Structure formats: C-alpha cells, structure tokens
Image 1 (cartoon, rainbow, N blue to C red):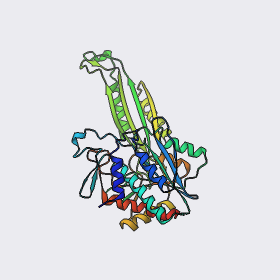
Image 2: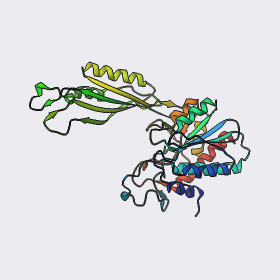
Image 3: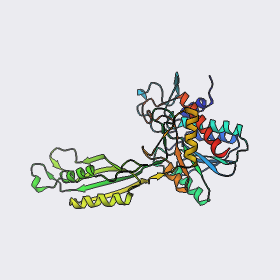
Image 4: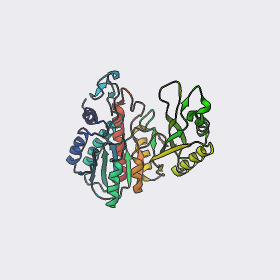
Length: 375
C-alpha cells in the first residue's frame, strides 16, 4: 500500500549524499515545502548546502535535520545496495533510513497534513536542513544560526529528528547533550637503540603512569540531567616500525564528553597540571567541538511528551546521553531544543534500517507537536 512517508524516504535514500554532499536531497524537500506555501532561502557555505524555510508568523517551531549520511563501508556486506532502498515486511533498509532521511520524510509529510488541516495556523513553522552534520559541521547549521542571529530572528522551539529512541519510538527523548573536547598530546623522549636504554628516554614508558592517572580520574559526578564526565583514549601512535629503536615521540589522542558540572577550560587546566606533575616533555593541542546544553521543562518538552503518550501510549525518559548534535548550535539562540526520532540500534552500521510502522507513528507525533504549539 502506498505510503507518502516511505515514498519520500526511498527517494532520499537513493541519493548517495555522503557528507558534505547533498546529492539532490534538498531539492526534493524544497519542492515539497514550496508546494505548501513555504518561503525557502538557500544558505550554502563552501561545499555545504543548507536551507531555511518558513511559513506563517508568530512563535516559531523549527524542524531541524540533515540530508548527509556516513559512508556505507563495504557495500558487499549489505543485504542490498545501501543506496537502493529495500523493503522486507515492515522494515526499510538503506543508508540514512534511521539517520536521518526517515525522520526528514516523516517531518515533511507531517507538515503537509498539518497545513491541510490548519492552513491559517497561528504560529510560524520552519525547517532548517543541512548537508553537513555527520562531518565537521563547520559550514552547516552553525553558519545558518550565525546568519539568523545577525537578522535577530527568534526561534522559540526546535525539534530535531535525530534517532533518539532505544527500543520503542518515543521511549527516549533528548533535551540536551554533553560537551566534547579532544586533546592531541605529543610526548617527547630521546631516540636510541633498544639495547642501550640508558642512553635514551622512552616517551611511551614515561607516559604510562600519567595516562593511568588520567584514566582513573573522576572528573565530576554528573547531576540529575547529565551523566558523569567521561574520558576515552582513542588513538595511540609511536615508533618507526622497527623493533630495535626506542621512539622519539609518543602521540596520544583522547576525548572528553563532559557535563555542565565542569567546563572545557577546567578540563584543559586539570590535564595539563597532571602532565606537568609527571614531568613530561610534551605539547598538546585542544579542540572543543561542542559545549553542553540543556532545555529545561517547558512548553516544548510538554508538547513532545503529550504527543508520545497520545500516539504511542508510553511516557518517554528524558536524557542527555549520546554524542553531539546540531542542537548545540541552535540552543545559542535561547531556543528550547528536543530530539525525537526513530530507534538508533542500526545507525552508522551495515544494513541500517527503520520500521515503516515507526516512521508512521513518528510522523503522527510530529503533527501532534505542531498542533500543540502553533495551530
């Protein structure tokens, strides 16, 4: 049986929009939005395509999403071509099915149904879509928000279609995310022959006690909204490949996902104090890619919870777990931000998929939220 959500999701999946390339996805979305009275403005920066679409006046509800997807990896491992959507019973397979072309299709169709029912809705409905969320995100939502801030736009509520759910659609929503900071550490030693270690200094050996202490450190205890800050060593590199040379350098990359109990400055200061205490000869470069953000209970969370209870008969858990999202940019405008999307079990994996029935329920939730906030 024909389903407009599935039809649009399939059309989007067929376009191989690997970050930051859009591959024509936004053209499809823009055509659908213009057909129901949206004013659409392209805001492209560098190799990234973005658009900002609005309809109506008043309090603004923004649906935010991304058309880009991660690489499918080895396509031969998929049960079907990752860019040729495949339906098996109630399941739609394809790269981006869950993250997040399915959500985009559910949003667009929900908007079409909502506008058919409320052609003169009292608030403003908007879409902010980018082609670079999975990559650096440098020219994506962040740049659009910069432009909207300069224009003194007011965005009251934002719903992001990231796959937030664990087992059932709507069982988890995200009202914030932790911050992210990466440290690129290089520890220096003295190169030499492994048979004469007294004439050299091994930076790996010198670093191990400091790294052990780094691993064992409790950074904070978190709070009612955020889990404790965590640190993970993600990359190590040293040596020339020879088994008889003590290396000159040891490179270590680690990443913190931090709560609002601590700041990126505090993390940097504490790490560098530890390194100095261990008397390491080092350099370190830091990159903060996200600050923590949090939306407190208010009209948006109430509307989202109401929609989930109405459409799926469950009450969601409200969490801040997981990675970062473009919500970190949108919240700079003082906007209430919530993430609600499909089940996340297969995102970025081989054979990514989503239940068709879940997309239908999700679209009904999105329509319900529009009715609560701007009908």
